[in-house]
Length: 349
Image 1 (cartoon, rainbow, N blue to C red):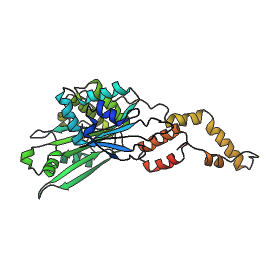
Image 2 (tube, helix red, strand yellow):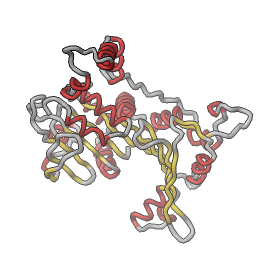
Image 3 (spheres, one colour):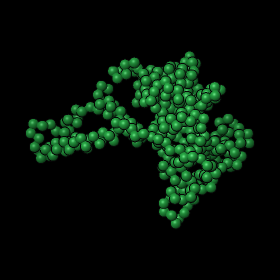
Image 4 (cartoon, helix red, strand yellow):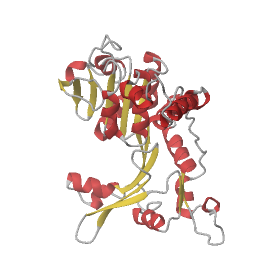
């Protein structure tokens, strides 16, 4: 794991630190801090481990419950070492969340899963991945890709290939980890050795689904990671006689890298009471046809003593339930700049 973030709806920051991270709270620095679109007022921090909490008390949350755990690269490494010393894995830690807080009271918002190739001769180079993308010789949940390249020395560059949008449910990164380590710690390539990293970034429902799979199989992170990768991304050999790219053969280096892995199909349940269901209620429940009727009367100057739809809309405020659905929808489509307007028009804001 290279990045973990979890939202706990019914826990305090201190409880998560003690019972999920299994760390004493007094080793953390605590200071005032906020998180965009949340009511947290304080942050607990040690190294690259952060817990935001002390939520504002409101009518809907009179006890000020809720917190947000984030662990970046080194933070994940630190917790991994603590778990490993006790014969445990992140899967066991995720199971603690379920056992202590129960289903539906917490959810993962992001997981970064890393696969490292430390072979002297790697299965593939980042340049090979780049060329496959440029030729569009890959099959994925997303056709988007871009590259990042920085100077490493007088003769070489450090490359990163991105496939998929960073805000999407699943995206990928391939990069020269060896060159990154050399740059950070002033070491040579000979000292570090060949090191190519493949990362999968999972968000929201997919992150939570993968965490639940890992919870059930806490000793099988490698199999789960390769299985997820195999089910969602293939680099292929072009066949100009076949227009359907999904029928192109998997290229040799990708076959060798994945091996005989079992595909992992994530079970992502359909969200209940979503905006899609609200839309269905609007159309099937007769609301839209009623609005259409009012617009018909208005357009023909036949409202009589009835109100204009626009006037009723101007006075309307979102319920907290609808506000939550709208906010989640805007986050999913990467339109978070609209969220403050939703919050402004929400009842009891």
